[in-house]
Length: 492
Ligand code: ADP
Ligand code: GLC
Image (cartoon, rainbow, N blue to C red; front, top):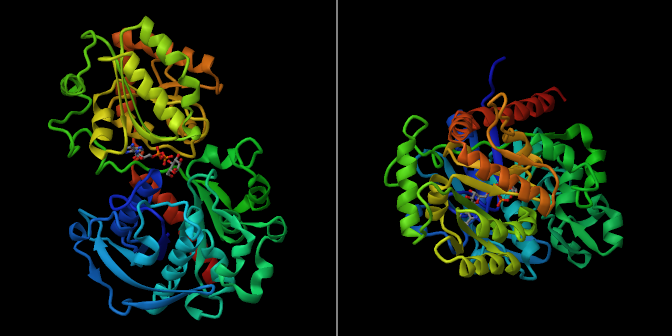
């Protein structure tokens, strides 16, 4: 079949390497690179947060998009669009420069106008397409921040022939974040009399749910792994949106994220002083020793290093590690290095663990790209005991770095890590089912035991390193979906 050259408008609240709190940024950045390299015309819109270093961007003002007015309900803003290259590519990202909204201490805020910040992003993106006379076949909205876009196409910009053939895709990266705000803010949506298209029961109950409207109106809904696509249709994982999703069942699918191997590959990682692949694991061992020395950790020469890099939210499952980690540290010789920040009880637990086991445990509270890469490279085992995990990227990075992932069988973790089987010597990680301290303890113990069986461990590492989750494969699945939608629109 002849491939179409597609025009795509992508809206995301985070785009790596410019702004990032988690995997959403990696995906928006990598998908943009993939689509551009595959020959599509992709315009990505994202806020110019004050944390973004403008001088490093070398941005250029987009003609026709300077100091333009924007109405968001009764609010009036002015914004300009600055374009900058995704490093190492010729793809541009369009930054919405509106200091009133985006010059804040962090990407997300608890400020009363939080909903306005992202409604404005969505409307500015759509109106920029109008001003550029850019007629996208696909508008791809990511997470709740952009989730009103499909509704807007249907009720606020439906008069414009530019969008007659535009089809919308909503990607849900995490159903735990829905963008819920008070119904009193309804006027901020600026849909006038078309308020009847909003979810009426929610309005009566006093709130508006951004993600739910995306689910109601997107032409296609995707989430970031096939298993999570099935999970979010259940009461256990749907976080209240399972019925809305089931009602759109035929439009919902799971497309596993890719891993950006330009950024995450031990053969060329720019944060590492030396590199390795499956045939040169002695270099990984040397990096581990250098890292242990840097972290002032002293354990036996044959002791494994266990690592994690994570937002510290309930989702990530650290609750079930609280009993076992200190118990195992008392009984066995291994080291633990963790990086993350978030909820206080997790930060306090790991800070306490470091105090209790000096020279064995290092916990770095905060955010550091450099340290994240070092932990991936230097560790032997990588912990992801998630309560739920839409996709998860670090387990894919771990596989590539020869760092065995220990994961709970949920969402994308279930789709990317195959349990190691001693008999067949197949499998890429340690996988457990129950979200319980006992199941985690058993998984950690079997990982430590396997590590001692060098022959099995070497095989497990090699199996993982041979996996390929590159965007070349996963990006193609998005293009197939876009093409299906675009063809349907042309036929209609
Ligand atoms: P989520 O998006 O739920 O946080 P993912 O596994 O999809 O989980 O992606 C997390 C991404 O954020 C990875 O690239 C990971 O390396 C990065 N990350 C998470 N916490 C930190 C941190 N404290 N410092 C640096 N990078 C981090
Ligand atoms: C979310 C999810 C994570 C996923 C990422 C990128 O933040 O928690 O599992 O990998 O988005 O899609």
